[in-house]
Length: 172
Image (cartoon, rainbow, N blue to C red; front, side, top):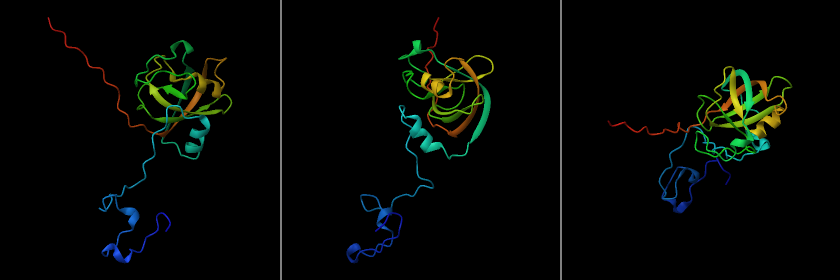
């Protein structure tokens, strides 16, 4: 029996009419989702993995601006999402996109493309729309220039909520 095809119930099944693939382990009918859930993007996903997964995906939104990259001196420090910054991972900072959002970044200088996952907040410099990890900056050819014009295309929105930091009430 192939996946997704309807199955004829065996004679000992008590007359069940649902395909066996639609029942959970306890024998109760499983709840069908409207769309299969994609597993979350791994923090250390390679460019090849991300390009295969999102290469044919139409963008959900687009914007343009300058992209820059993080200093290697920040390696190991905690990002706004709580992850440590790792220069060899394809990550970026954006002011408001949800953590876990995957974007396609296209250099307007030469058309090179990189896929990155948003895991930090920033940049806080006028005109800049992304701060890229060193790996992403190398992929786009930004290392010598430091900053470059980019087109950013959201290919999957993340669902992680912003990390909240509790403020302590001041008592006088």
